[in-house]
Image 1 (cartoon, one colour):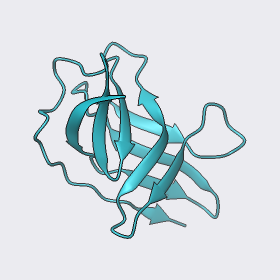
Image 2 (cartoon, rainbow, N blue to C red):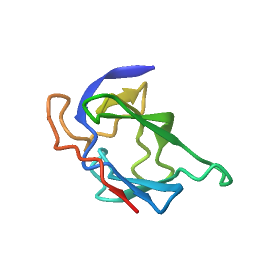
Image 3 (spheres, rainbow, N blue to C red):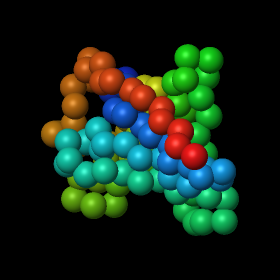
Image 4 (cartoon, rainbow, N blue to C red):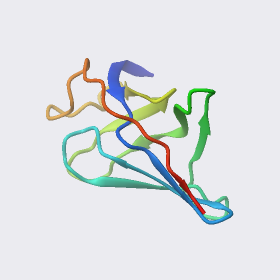
Length: 106
C-alpha cells in the first residue's frame, strides 16, 4: 500500500448535477495537471468518493497518473497516501498540509 503520508488532497471538488459526475483535484505529484476522476457508474474507469463527518474525502480505487508524472496514490480521509514506487521526485513534501475542499454543485 502506501509509502507514507503525503498531505491533504488539494481542493478535491465533486461536480454534480443530480448524479455525481466528476471528482477533480490538482495532481500531488508536482506535474501541475488537473486530475478528473469519473464518478458516473456507467463510465469505465470510474471512482467513488465517500466523505466522513468532517467532509474529508476517501476515493476508491487508487489514482494512477499515466502521463510523464506517473504518480500513484490513494486518497484516504482527505490525505494522500503514496503507493510503493508511486511518488515522483517532484512530489509535494510528505509533511505538507494542503487545503482541502469538497464542492458539490447541482
